[in-house]
Amino acid sequence: MIEYFKYRLKLARLLRQKENVRNSFTKDIRMAQNERKPKEDIESLEYQSYFEESVLDEEISILATDNLICKARRHFVLIPPHDTKGMWEKCEKISNRYVLTSKGISLLRSSLRKERKQQFTVTNSFFYLSTIHG
Image 1 (cartoon, rainbow, N blue to C red):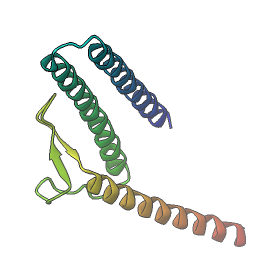
Image 2: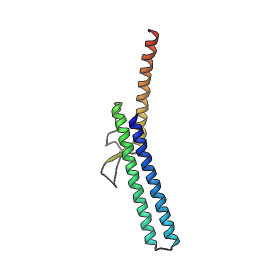
Image 3: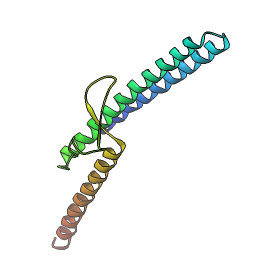
Image 4: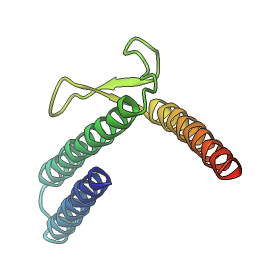
């Protein structure tokens, strides 16, 4: 349970950071446009904004991937192999790690839900039987 809160706090921090970066660069770009700065300067700011946001997106993807893989290992759920097409993508900005794509995340979440449902059913059945035979 504590791991979940740690994950949510880190995710919230990264999302807030991304929003701050976006707002800051949007403000800088508007100011540059109002001051009639050269097109190259404005394009440079836009590129910097894109780069900073993509770095934060990769950090979010790494965090989400690590969280799901940890849950999958804890519940003995099969993690998609790296050679499965469309399940993994390589980070290019901050590391050479592979992270789950949207399709991979969806598949792993679905597998985790099925496993938790099965574990709940088994536990619930055991509890039901133990109350009957008391």
